[in-house]
Image (cartoon, rainbow, N blue to C red; front, side, top):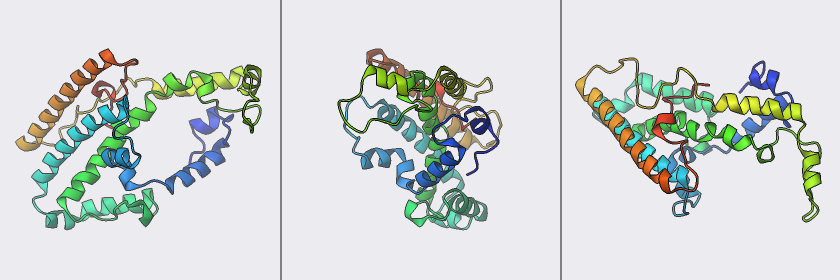
Length: 260
């Protein structure tokens, strides 16, 4: 993972970690990524978050996940009639193997498959990919300005080390530790850019290229759009009674894929 020569290095030289530190952090984080953690239902269960109240990411995310899973299942079952058809598709298997090798560095402990043997495993894998590259990204990206525009939530740098004992922190010590104005403005510019809707956004379920011309796949695409419209109405209704509206997983704000 190389993050040099781009925006992070040129515009954010003040970050606590620095560009080398960010690469080291990403490398460490990759060692903890699990396949199950990339699948929303399993991730929620593993973290014991199935029943806590007011967890909007879980509630709205489950609706999106289930809609995607149904859509993916319909498309996959149309083109793959048996487990053998999955096993003998060389391009599919090469794609999965490349992600395992290049994306997850052949780390078996991650649970990421290096090949697929069944139709159901293909449905799960593709649902994970679609969700992570669209809704999953939207959930963590769209709220960056909302969260980080209040500097104490995530200062890009600190002028003093964090407190080591309880009870000794005061308003003044907090203020003295936070970033200066110029550094703060640079962070705000970065998170604003990341959170701003791009002019060429392609919303989830809207496909400008006609990759599928058969009637059955086209029917599944239409059903997916209708389900997303239904989810949009549900989220709008839920937001009427929520203390704060949660829009990061509203279908109208989710793109088909990562665009930054």
